[in-house]
Image (cartoon, rainbow, N blue to C red; front, side):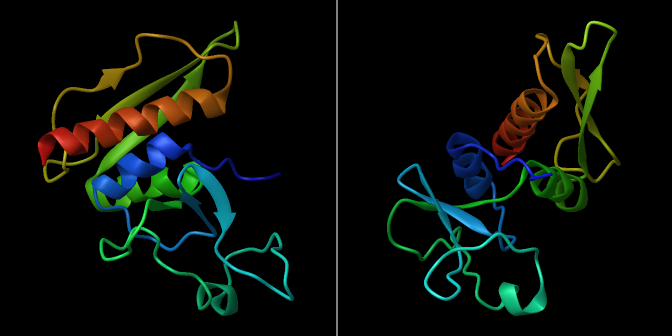
Length: 144
């Protein structure tokens, strides 16, 4: 199973609100690139110490050009929980329609407003999660 990477728009917003974890991929002007080269070609590898040493922070504010790091949806979801105290939950019903819910996990969370439930339904888990991540990042952006 491959982890779903976030879209360029979500990656740009994540960069704006301070996402700075090392990732296996980055966007440059909306084009996706791997962050490592092994024997002249990119490979699918897991996060390991030797690979992590090869990665760069493409969300570094000093990096010139239109770059941004590209986490997986799961990584960004964890970052929102761990760093901002915001949970993005995905649920479904018997019609296999997917929705997201965003909630604050504690009083010190970046967003402490009411729980938000998506007003629309999505055809896939990944689409619902992508929209929920984007909305959670917008909440952080508005709080800052």
